[in-house]
Length: 256
Image 1 (cartoon, rainbow, N blue to C red):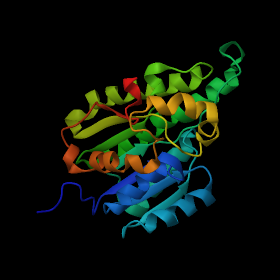
Image 2: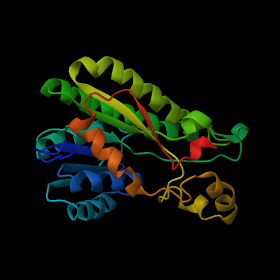
Image 3: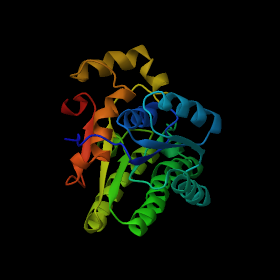
Image 4: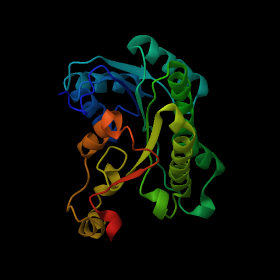
């Protein structure tokens, strides 16, 4: 009997797949047998990530340069992915930027729009392009967005980031409602304290470790590899009846 977690013959797209959580997801999907498309803004980093992902499995791996905040770039990258790999069965909208302002009163409109353009607009544009493909192709599919624990808790001086991540949760729930009849499911990941290039500067601060680590029951920072299991599950037939859900991946931090 074939394992429900076997992704052989499936095609998965991962935005922001050049590093961090996205790279962890892409690597896990490839190891489970999927063909994987990695989108990243930096073509060299995307190509390097693709080489790493190829070493995890035997499927095809495609690297494309794409700024998810650019509507035309997203449409072209989606078309190129389908052209090269034949289809998209699972889409992980993971690309994001983060920023902290000196204070909310000093948060500029430019910075507000920059973060929302990538994190929220980019998720919308990516999902819209992929959903159009899935609807035209038929057969359903899986949409997975990366939000954050801050979608629920918020963060001082990062209202733009928190707002974008909260918007992603609402977007995913709305997609689950509308697209369920078409066999397309939508779920969202809410990472906690994960050690990635985006967070390494703050995690490296001794005061942060002293304050945060005791509040994580798992007793450590999360790693991109900690998203392997949930990524494969959500891309596989094992999650065929699972939609509209939020998965907290934080080592138990939300319990404190």
